[in-house]
Image (cartoon, rainbow, N blue to C red; front, top):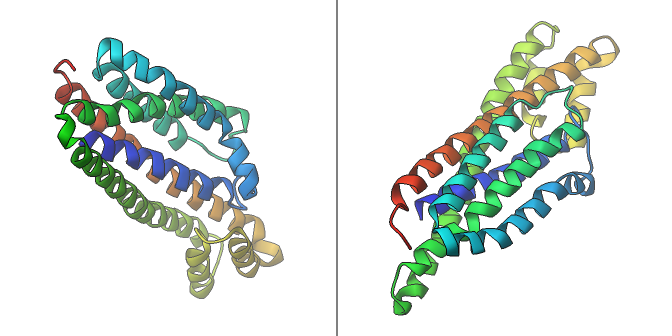
Length: 239
């Protein structure tokens, strides 16, 4: 259940924060449909790996697919934490596939492990406990990751805005718009930048978005690494 909770932090956190980052006007500026299409390698690799991971788990037990999958999720999150303004769509394929393979390997087998270790009459309770772990993981991912994203992103953006001569009122408007709708952020940039400072304000917003996304990715990496440790230590017993 702990492994499932930590893996869900990675699943929900990645989908939530990647879409927030990819749809921002200061980064890739994708539409919702465009961002979803970018995620296709992630979804396909997750789907295919989850089908194969079950067979692997039946043969060698749960430790390798669960622990190994979480290690791959950690690597993928670290790679995403390095994304910046020079990152191209092609550069995203490696972390997308690595993260998708990792999640596909660990998620299904991490769910099967507790269900296979209890008597048949207790499988309902085990499944319910497993679902609660997922809900808690998803809630923690958005809450903690959101706080890190906003806190680190706003701090980095404000540091960059300090040299652009932006007023306190305009800075507050930018702070509020950083993780809002793309149109809202663009309006805040136009209002704060004017014709002379727009490039500086745009760069500051991009710096903030990159810093916030990196902070959320590092949270996912830490949780995935912790999940891998728990998996290798707690699932050592044969199935």
